Amino acid sequence: MIDENDGNIIRMFHVYRRYGPKNALIDITLDVSKNEFLFITGPSGAGKSTLLKLLYLKEPVSEGQILIDGMNLSRVSAKRIPFLRRKIGIIFQDYKLIPTKTVFENVALVLEVAGKKRRLIEKKVKSVLRTVGMEERLNSFPPVLSGGEQQRVAVARAVVGDPKIILADEPTGSLDSESAGIVMDFLKRFHTRGSTVIIATHDKELIRKTGGRAVHLKEGRLKEKMNIEHRTSNIEHRMGNDEETEL
Ligand SMILES: Nc1ncnc2c1ncn2[C@@H]1O[C@H](COP(=O)(O)OP(=O)(O)O)[C@@H](O)[C@H]1O
Ligand SMILES: [Mg+2]
Image (cartoon, rainbow, N blue to C red; front, side, top):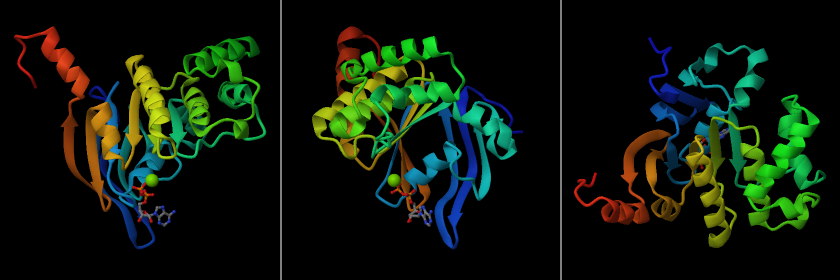
């Protein structure tokens, strides 16, 4: 029986993804618990983006099963796919904002598609843009913004619908380290508010700086799991509670 949540918002069972003769993902079994902050790491071509594409239903598995929030993706009818997608916010390396729509419109679109009322949309979009420090750029078009600013708008778009899951594919890959830090801080903040966050990155330094659980992909296989304690939280942990043994 695999129709259970067990506190896991995502469950993957022996998942394969093939492109013709190419095995992009091989026998992936992975549980992601609710409100986890998880990195998927590995070199270019390892299968990170493919894994995320399966989770946001861009592509089907070739074999195996995926459950998201208790729903088996292979049994979801086409009609219900949009509802399932609304549980997920996505962030890409190249932002993927619509260049001919303003910052406000780019973020509002998510809620319009979900059929939300105009007044609520306006309130919510402004509030989220304020959170990522982009409220002054409501009426700007993406091409005039810096990469870091565009990615902050993309983060706003990903979270505006209050998704249970946020997926980010190399979200800092095109950013300088300062902008990267800002974007990671926002992802951390939305994680603290209750979302499950999964970040695909080849950047080991980013993982070291951020801390958290990381799973490693190599040539389509889940190779190893590491738990990297965040340095700062380690120190806070020691200072705050001397008698507690370190994990
Ligand atoms: N649409 C596709 N058609 C054929 N091969 C693909 C396709 N998408 C990905 N691949 C291959 O699958 C492997 C994993 O790709 P990808 O998931 O993009 O890796 P990563 O994101 O870790 O760099 C690569 O060898 C890539 O060439
Ligand atoms: Mg990739």
